[in-house]
Image (cartoon, rainbow, N blue to C red; front, side, top):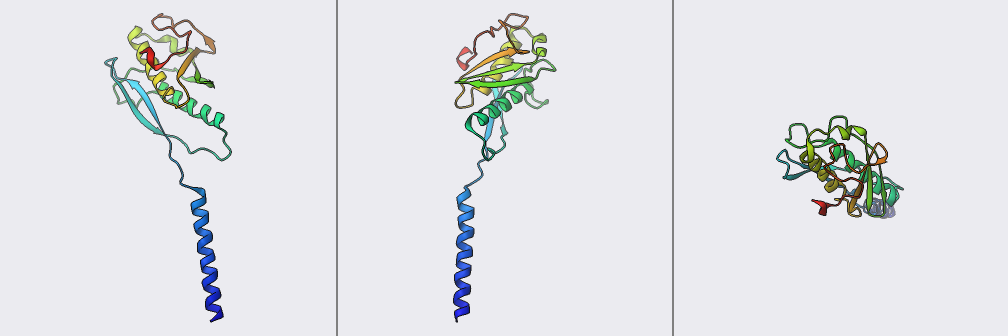
Length: 171
């Protein structure tokens, strides 16, 4: 009888320990990010959702914000899948760096972005998608664009002013 009672106590302790381990870790949060783009008509703003990696153990808030902003900018510049009819950044354009200061993200794009040949229509659509994507991150409300590490007044076409941070309200 003592053996049975001892076995029951051991099983109860094992079950309680397993329950504690499972519930104390909490659920694994799956984070998603909305990536915006403008359709080829130049006016329709569309989006798709990408999954984010879970927050790493020990990852600080500022590091996480940087990583999310970088991922958002890279996805926005890459654009939607190739079969989607959308305005795209010029071939070769990529994100060199992203930093966040206060509520402004600074996105440094490669010089390939200056080869845009679509005029104001294309420039507006490209940057609208980028700005909507990055400002979709809760603590960011503006995007400062650099080209190859430098602040520029505009791209060579001169259609969109880039020397001040861009906001959703600019569209």
